[in-house]
Length: 147
Ligand SMILES: [Zn+2]
Image (cartoon, rainbow, N blue to C red; front, side, top):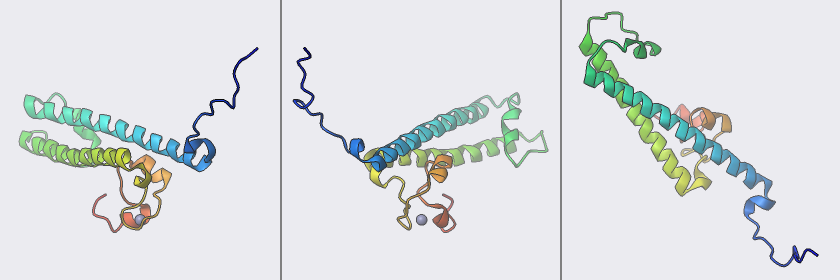
């Protein structure tokens, strides 16, 4: 005797339960959030490395900068290397700011997170997967300043 009537206490259906589109959308948003947090973690680690280079002024961690296209041929210029670190740090700071801003948008108004700021079209999954902090679709990216 199972004294439970499945009809007695109907669970309140969440929108995702009966709308497959909403479920897929929730999944996409969860993925964007994960990507943003990943990018954030990487950036913070990178910023920490740059800060170490400032502080120590040592030449032991030269290898970190070889990933970047403007490779320093002249190894003797410590100041140039510091300026490069500073430049990278400020670019990364800006990106970090955008990522934080994107996370805020995602938490506050998830319904508009993947909507292009310029044309109102949905930004493609591939694009947001690659650059989760972007506010512009591919078509509008060309007109937007460095986003
Ligand atoms: Zn657009």
